[in-house]
Image (cartoon, rainbow, N blue to C red; front, side):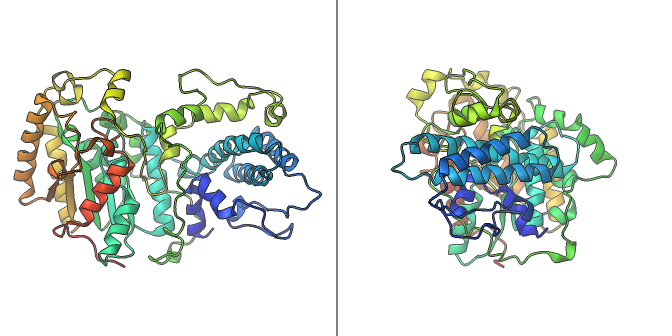
Length: 483
């Protein structure tokens, strides 16, 4: 299977619809539309006058639901995906003047959720074939990263860090901004892990990834919490107790199965990369933010109530019951909302804008002296040793290491947190003299505005874009040369 085709499995469903054109295409019944791997290609029939699109949509959706009852292998889930693509195509083909149009549009959104689930089943979980690291996000990001390398080659710039990195640095914007400076063709991937500390980053770079997976440059974006040795490092401790860690200790690293010989690596300036622009609507992110919509995907409404389920696929697909088949609904409920929302380059785009008055009507304000992330605050020690290990590791392999202190809101920086921030900055400046390049964006004017954040300390997609542009404009960062 060509590598770029395998990688396309990770393109969000809404991009697949964009590739289909959103309208009837005049092709022969035996022709195909290239939407992924050959086994995942959907045949798009001609919309003839005698064919009723709504009925065709129901037919393919029923077929998809029935196939999903017994699907186990990647090939079987590919077939389920093909049927959902057909169902989406036909429902989207219901004319605007047709009385069934509004209902059909709702079905399009519903079928897209099932399509994403089928794609998930056919990719990471079935192809990584490796025990869990006790972290769903680490498992998913690892599978995606290995697939990215198979499709595009090793990244020039690898972003690491905690949740603040996952949604705090947009790889696309960074790549585009560097391109505008003449550094074109750079590959950028965000391998951030929720809950990651310095110990987790050391594990990622020095144990989990092999030499063939390492980038030309490491961009470590985070903040003071990831380097506090006084707090209990739950994420790292869960990883070292995981079945995946035990397997890793035996000398076997995770890898994806591949039908493409290693020597057939694609060109670095692959025309497939970054050619499809994201649509303005993201299936898991609107003005209410990713959390509200992802709760619907997981089988809950915005109030936290379970959405009704059904056991008869035809009944719910035709609308003669407002429920879904048990097999599909169970799978949808179990989906990782974060895993679905993360894009093909490891980035989590969040549209929610932080509004303090609204935010604290729904959540309690936690002062820094009661914040567990700042408990027994101590720089150096365990996390400091991990930091210095990463710096020495990068230096030994001549990989530039840039550590970025991401901004937070003024609302977040009370007296306790501000004092810790000052202590942290002083510590990092001392270490950076010889070990790495330190960039402190917490003091950059304009990056701490509330509308750049999802909550007091996590950037949203607008802040992530601003951070990427700010970094790209820094003349002192030794960016890799363009390809």
